[in-house]
Image (cartoon, rainbow, N blue to C red; front, side, top):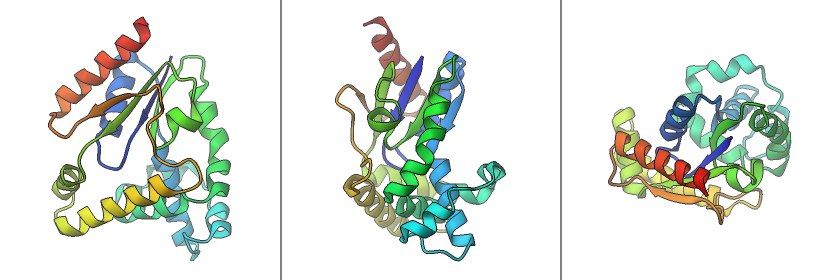
Amino acid sequence: MIIAVDGPAASGKGTIARALATHYRLPHLDTGLLYRAVGVGTARMGGDPDCENDAVAACRFDEALLADPELRSEAAGALASRVSRHPGVRAALLAYQQDFARQPSGAVLDGRDIGTVIAPAADAKLFVTASAEVRAERRHREDATTSYNDILADIRARDARDSGRSAAPLRQAEDADLLDTTNLTIGAAVQRAIALVEARIRR
């Protein structure tokens, strides 16, 4: 069984995807981490994240980089949003993601284009979202060193970049179930996600 979980930054998609993976005993891939690795790698190489050639060169990273705590920072998220606009970067990471999805056991993947590009034939698809204000509040609780207004501005800018890019833009797949977590606790959001997946499986 393949479960695709898409959505914007800080919507809760990663937490929900991990919970689904645990519930169904499936391997999980946070595909955003791959783009964060490319973004951070580009910066460390002295490259320009907005230059496609520089970003593509950083796609050949050591998998040990995926465990680097820096990849979880707001700065890494901003870099990921910039490098992910490049068709060459998306093409370079496509095979890795699709191979992960095609494991015999199945898998849970979360990102921006799982249900539309990486695994369009997934057994269940969720599009997880929340208001920009609530997402900024969540990020601010995680990083109080950055002002709420700065985080909100960054989230809105990332939403615009992710939705407006020509290569695999962020959008809800036609057959994906919408899960708005704006007014949900983590527990309630996870239970709703499981219920939506179960309903898909029964169809």
